[in-house]
Structure formats: C-alpha cells, structure tokens
Image (cartoon, rainbow, N blue to C red; front, side, top):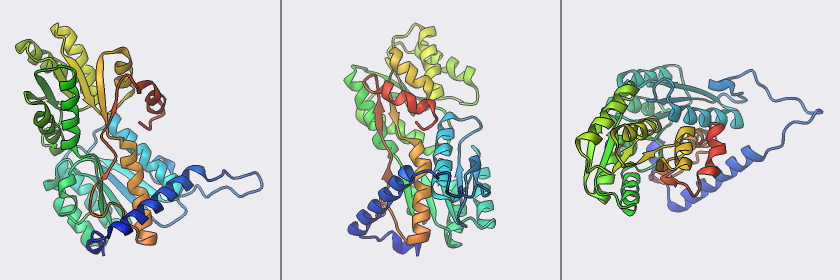
Length: 338
C-alpha cells in the first residue's frame, strides 16, 4: 500500500495538500470548550502530556542529543500536533545511529501506528526503517536523509534540501563580499551537514571544512579561533548549528578576525546575535513544522489514505532570517516554536 501511494498523481497530491491545510486550520481555530461542555479526555498521553482521543500512537525518533535546542523545537511541534489532533505522540532521540536504529525497532515491536524518523546516518537506519515498512507501519522521514527516503519505503520526507540551502548560504556570503569561507561541521557522519558545506562550495567557491565536536563547547570555540588565526584570509564562517554560531562569534573576537558569521537554524541567542549585528543571517528550516506536519500526515494517511508530496520532499525551508525580520521571529523563538 505504501509503494502505490508514491505513485500519486499531481491532482491527488494537490487534493492532499488541501486536506492537510484544512486539518491545520481546523486544529488551530477550533473553539475551546464552554462551561456547559464536557472537557476533552486528557487521560491519554504521549510526550509532553498530549491528550489522545484515538488509538493512533506515533513514535517520533530523532538523532538529537540531550539538551539540543534545535530538536527541542521539533519535539514541541510533534507534541503539539498530538494534542491538536488527539493522537498519542512518543518522542525519543539518540545521537548514536545504532541506538537510534534500536529505538525504531522498539517502536515496531510495541505496535506503533506510525513512525517519524530523522536520518542523519541513513545507512545505519535502513534495515530498521525497511522492517517497519514491511510490518505495515507508515514511516515519514524528516530533516536529513532526503535522498534515501523513497528508497527505504517511506511515505514522504519533510525537511529542506540541504544542498539547496547550502547554495543559498554561499550566495548570501558572496553578496556580502566574502572571499573565503570556513564551514564548521559539528557531527561526524551526518550526511546533511556535509551536503550543506558542499552546497555552499558549489555557489561560493573557496570553502574550507572544519570538524568540531558539539559535545565539547570549549573545544569548538578553540578550534574555530585556531582556524581563523592560522588563515587570516578567511572572512566568513558558516556554522551549521546555533550553538556553534555563538561560539564562532566569540572565537572571531578572540582571534582578532573580522570574519562574518552566519548559521543554519535558529535559537534565541542567534536571533539576538542577528539583531545586535554579530550574526549576518540564519538559514531557517522551520523544525517546528518538521515535528508537526508528519503527525498530521500520518493521521490523514491512516484515517483517509491521504498522501502528501507526490513522491517529492515536502519542503519546510530554506528561509532566511536576517536583520530585516529577526524581530518578528524573536517572539516565536521565545515560546519554543521557531
């Protein structure tokens, strides 16, 4: 059934988008209960205490590490979708690819109705994802691993094209007059990060990659500072993570470098940095949507056989946040939705 859904015609895809839009509007505008109405059942629960009024249980499994600000926003989106739609959402994560694969296996064994999974390391997850599909569980991939999504049998992919986003970032740096770029990779083996740097190189030209360990913030800052001191020609730093971006700003100051810093993804610190003029721009892939939309899509698929994307990725980015719109986005970041 899943393979046939990927042959959806363009007209059916458009109809699916309309249904998705209607579901989102309904979930956001439905009136609250009055004093004369009985309150909704709140005894069920996925992550974040979402109430469940159906027997649908969706496992959201990402490669985010503990305390990762990016993935906490995606988790917020998934759990809010569960509350809005009355389905159970169980969010788990593990930065180790083998451990993440085991989380997928556990979701299959526990009879999950659907699975949402990020694929920073697709090869390590392939067997587990294919086993879930073979078991009749609809899978939607998010964030990384777009190119492997259809191959593994997933229903759809929700995220941004990392290569295209990297190209956009490279173009923005070129427009600012930068001539040599340092692209900082913070997770070894994450295919999406490599695609970002490759995309930047394709549009910008002179790009040097630097590998750091996100779990060691002091080392991140020291390595960026050392790279800037070793090569004064570097006049742009492209971080691929908000925490790396803030470290890069400090490192540039310590190195006496005038290199401009930009980043992928948002945080309150990044937005403050943009407003202060310390960060040039952020590439926003709207991870809240990467959590929210797949829950909607799986529910619609299970209850109405709707599919979205027509075999193509459902793009949540890239968008750009800079000094022109940072203030508008700031209030949403503060509440954990951007």
